[in-house]
Structure formats: structure tokens, C-alpha cells
Length: 240
Image (cartoon, rainbow, N blue to C red; front, side, top):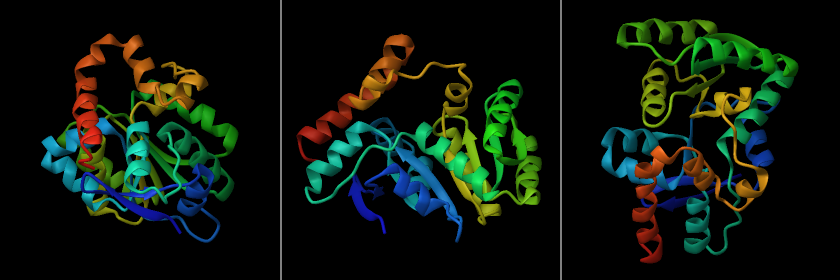
């Protein structure tokens, strides 16, 4: 149903439309099981430096192009492929709405306990069946208990907002114990959803400049953006 492409050795779903992808992942017939990971230029470079992160990405069932650089790379390498950027925050919201419609049990991990309460309150308008929540500031001992909670909750969709690579590595560990669910790493999505963090205006999003908007608002991110220069070199020299 979804075309597969390879960028810098990473296999991705070439998604034509967010709605189609969301329906593929979650519908009346089934909820897909596996790991759903957003791929952007920064994550590609980080994965080349971090073997554990690269392993998670390589083993993930559903990698999708969240960054405009990845979308442009796919269009350059595969001229016959139709693809659009899928913003993780937008995909998460659509999946949450579908979860409410289909009564899919959901477990939320990440952010602060206070912010999770705000997320729960907002999700109530979509009748989302939240079977558990846990903040993102836990230690190794807490993690063992958390994994048990997730498994015993019967959750079929688990979203994890802890930032890369922490969220991907955590998802891998939980998935190894409880693979009967769909896992999604969502970064700062909870903060955007509750209004704690402002998202780029639509015009910036449509132009693929959400990264620049975040950089202008948070200048301390500039070191992270250096990864974009390395990726740009790969793009220009056709090392895709």
C-alpha cells in the first residue's frame, strides 16, 4: 500500500498523504503493530554517529519523512515517487482522533506530570481512551515498573515524548517486552498540543522552514542545526 524508499541506507515509507497513512496505521479492521519513527536530516546524521539509534531506525517498521530535507531527497532520488512531508505533531493528532473514534487504548509517556494532565484534558474532547500516563523523568528502576504498567494496561497505541535519541531507545526497550502495540516517538508534541510551546505559523510549515522558526526562537539550537550542513553536502553530492 505504501511505497518504500531508501535514503542514506534508511528505509522509509514514501507517504503520499497523511490521511492515507493514518488510515493505514489505524482503522476499524486493525491497529498496526510496530515502531513509528519520524525521520529528518538531523536524525539521519545523529544515527550515523549513534549505532544504537541507527539500530532502532533500521529495525523500525514505519519510518516516515518528517523533515523537508528528507522529502526533497526522496524526490531527487526517486523521481517517480509521490510523497509529502508528514509532520509528526499533525500525524499524532490525527491518530489521537482516530483512537477516540475506534476506542483504541492509549498510553502517554513523556513531558511533565502537570503537562500530561493538560494533554489528557484536551484529548477528552476526542473521547480518547487513555489507559495510562507516565512523565518522562524516570530512572532505570522506574523504567522497569513503567514497562510493566504499559504491558498490563493493554494499550495498543503508545506515544513517547522524550526527544531523540532517548525516546527511540526507550521505545525499543518497551517493544522488546511488549510488541503488541503501535509505538510513536513524538518529541515536543505534547508541549505544542497544550500551548506550552508555540509552533511555527502555517506559512513557515508549508515552506518547510519550521526548523528555522524554532532556531530563531531558540538560538541555543544552532549547534544542532550544524547537522543540516552535513546533510546538505550529502544532498548536493548525490550521496543519498
